[in-house]
Image 1 (cartoon, rainbow, N blue to C red):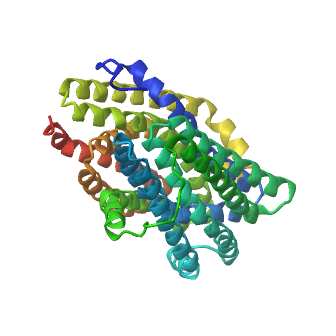
Image 2 (image 1 turned 120 degrees about the vertical axis):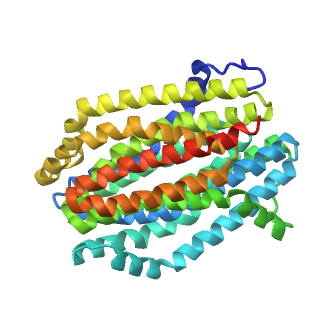
Length: 441
């Protein structure tokens, strides 16, 4: 949608239209986790689900921590695209590819250290530790491809080709689901199959869009990508500076979810497995609701650029209302279908029983969390990254403090109560900094 041609009122309908492609691409991401959880949850032994929970949580924290590669690419490419500087766009992509591959290989080399840290950090059985190492040994090799995919997504978002970026995510997620299901159900590879499915899906997606993007650049920009004059120190420093605050924010956010996994492992593998299952509901709702946040980032930036406080307030109000209304619908659907979904995800009766005891948290969190999701999008659109960083640090520290206290008295319910409070802390801390955005008008 062209903001300049659209109404300055930015109605709910316009926000919904912008959110539709993002919604479908975001929906594909948590579906991978749900399918993987279901595959492991129906193997008849808790250890597979416990191992997958720890291994995927750690890998997700590592990979998501470098999400600044996507966000940094968006900003730099968008600015160059506005200037019609296509050669700089190509150089930015190639420069970022090199950076992503270097980071990826450093992570691969650090695999032994990573496994030692997991062994010391989590309480688990010897069998579970073996399964975790099996997963890590395979999945870690997908990191370079996954980081480059971040850059592809940032590139297409930067040149306003949101349909292509959404297609990329859908292709990656679909291939991941297909290969993981094939290896587990047909070849009985268990946790190795899940990791191998992610590895193969990542590299196939990487190769498909590498070829597609090369042809796209040659055809649209009339530029032949060449690895010449790319290692420019100030350019690389600029990439890090642009998104350093977001890097810190993302690191703390992913650690908070890893902390949930850690606390569950301290209580016992049954609770660790249950928290893995329940977390899929939370992640699914967050990715769905994030569609509104992602789609309004550009609008918020546009309204600030036009110094139109009236349009800004309209966008904020409409996006909040849409997000909350959608969150309530999600909670109602969870209330209706929770038991049926749990029966599909796992065939272990004990896990089903414990899951049913925690249904209230799955229902309560989406309507409470929708506000902090939307505020994140507003602050990113306003480029108030310092505030995002500070708010997240404060919220995570508050979350950890509450969880340590509440788990003593409420056991696993204490973890989920703390997670609910974490969402509240995020909203309140961002609301505290909201006045800084209004100063731009």
